[in-house]
Length: 190
Image (cartoon, rainbow, N blue to C red):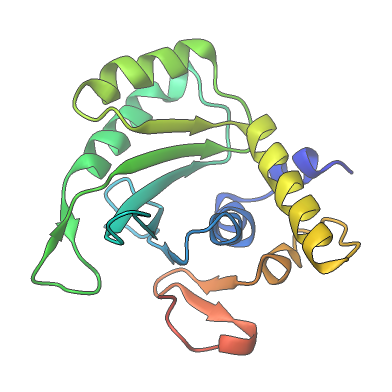
């Protein structure tokens, strides 16, 4: 079964925890947190990278969908993006507020051109840094990480949903606290 087909068969929770969060970690986001809850305000995943020049925290969020993104889902997507754009309490320093630098909308399926145009024209009015990743692009990124890590480590890993997190170096298991599993079990991701 192809990677894309496997990704499309996952629940939104499994897609988020077993694929997207480890993928973000492998792509260089050292601080990846599962933010999915009734109070997420459009941010299923939040992550922090560091600005290469100033070494400041750069916050991003991912809105995860397991379905096609098209005309029927635009109202809901737009509402979630508008919520996500708002500042939120810094999870590390509750007295501070955080503004996102970017938002990624990710689905294991398709994003129609009509939906992409709408998202950028409507949701992007007040926030220009919105990225869209569809199933083809997600498949490409997963394959890219597999090739890079295999080349670096001389490995021969073959994609498996259940082992991808370990392969990427971090397994995410607890949706409320973004706790890693394996060697650092019980430790909050930082």
